[in-house]
Amino acid sequence: MKIFISTGEVSGDLQGAMLIKSLFKVAGEKNIDLEISGLGGDRMEDTGANIVANTAVIGSMGFVEGIPFVLPTIKIQNLAKQYIRQNPPDILVIIDYPTPNLALAAFVKQELPHIPVVYYIAPQDWAVPMLNNTPKIAKVVDKLLAIFPAEAEYFANKNIDVTWVGHPLLDRIEQAPDRNQARLNLDIASEDKIVTLLPASRQQEIKYLLPVMCQAAQTISQQLPEVKFIIPVSLPTYRDAIATAVKQYNIPATILDSQTLDAIACADLAITKSGTVNLEIALLNVPQVVIYRISPITAWIGRRLGFSVPLMSPPNLIVDRQIVPEFQQEEVTAENISSEAIAILSNFSRQQRIITGYQEMRSLLGSLGVCDRAAKEIFLQK
Image 1 (cartoon, rainbow, N blue to C red):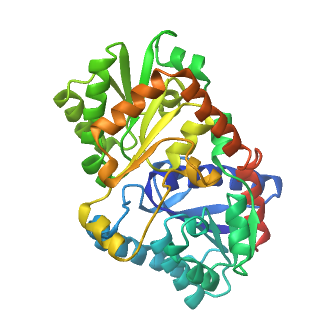
Image 2 (cartoon, helix red, strand yellow):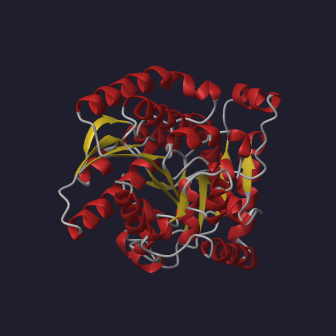
């Protein structure tokens, strides 16, 4: 059996790699000779996939931010289409990355309509209906594997064949170190006060979030000099920019080239970009401050179009209320970030309220074995 998996960005590469491990596991149980190819990154390649083109470094949010990636994305799409024509898969699995993935699914439905299309980790139309991906999904997707119960209900009401499998980060976090082990792994004393900074998995976040995050860290360091900072690097290409910022703002920070889960698990607080990493932080029971900012032009266009996102970070979206503080656009200032961070670090009851919110969120994510369930559903499509 041949499966083609298409995804993009750092988080998609992670989710793809986790799914591939389970696909090979289930294939072995079923005595299926399996070949996997697709679009992804190093993690997917390391788990046994033949990567046609690397999309882990292509990722943006916003109108203006996406412009530099238009031509590279078109080139990769053309490569993928050519590969699929020459090596037709038995199943196409698309993961997140809605605009390119729905275009690829439409191509397959037009030229190779017998190939079933499975969407795993779909766009968040259930939380933000204005995204308006649902009509496209209904046309080109045969099976949708939902990671949230509200998501499954939403798409089922749109007459899309959907199965709720749960959130795959449950499987990932099951293998993560606890606080004590993480500190042992990183040679950090149990009494040290640690703040982990997670500025970027996209190039635009280096520009719009890294400087203000470092400014906030500088303020925290001045008011709480005992605090030490850790910054895990999501992509090697970001390391130089992060190292330069750390030096510029004179932050007592250690930069890690990997060990993201250790960097999170060991922390007393995380200051982080918005995205999948917010769920990792929440599942590791670490309080966090979330920030999100795009270019002023993109923000202006979005507002003119009536686009509004009251809640941005996944933990808040899942429970539909703010359990972790988040700042968007003009609210993303060093003063706001540092004052919120210091308030959490200095107030045990604030920390406990966040942890209680995490427990509520966790109850909505399903049970362990998510990737295996997703893999079994994929095999059922053929």
